[in-house]
Image 1: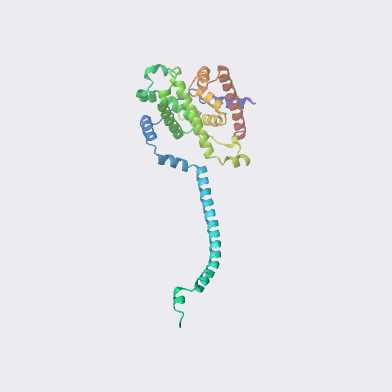
Image 2: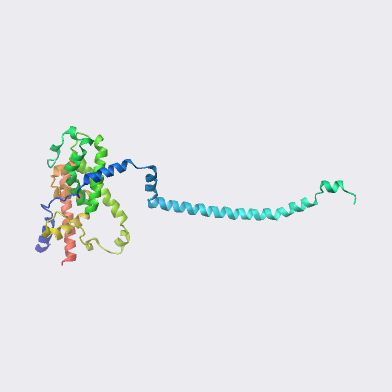
Length: 111
Length: 189
């Protein structure tokens, strides 16, 4: 390492020697007290909101909504297919019903 | 430690004296936090969080430990956690790491308010270099340089032996010098 480089590095390493202390903004205690008051008033809703804000939870929630929707669509398809089968059976039922003789037919046999 | 502990007798360390504790320790907490997070607003947030933890933990505070040691530990843990969380949030860094943007390409973005004007640029580069240090080395170096603590006090705070604290200082200085060499070779030569 050259002398010049050494000097630069030494000077940088010594740059914070004897530096003054920084101070926080005024009214720190007031802000701390406010924060302490807020921690006491945490409700169940703020806790829920805290968890919902997490990206992982949001991603799982979206996945869940998509899954439920896909299941609902599939179920509806199956339901429609089944309804299609029952519709084709129903006319036979009616035909059978039409062919059954009613009380009127048996009691009034004479023209 | 820094004469602060003599301010408090054991019976005075209680929630009733919390305001006094804040007044006596706020600069210590703020400066330690500022050295780690390297941002004044963030250091304010960390300071606030530290004192909330101090208040909540005062009942469980073990009287055999010094209060300053205890508060230093809380500050260091809180500031390092804050820093990690912040880095995680701004990290599109995987791509940056793969496609260049080497560490020495970064420019100083933090200028400590307590540094003399003629040393601000150099101090900015040194703080940038400190960001690259492992947590323990960074903490030991900061406590020594910024807070002016001895290796004995640093060892107590970090719960390590005196030799380990001295070793951390040496390794921190070596790593800083290596980083500074690479930085100045890139930017000035």
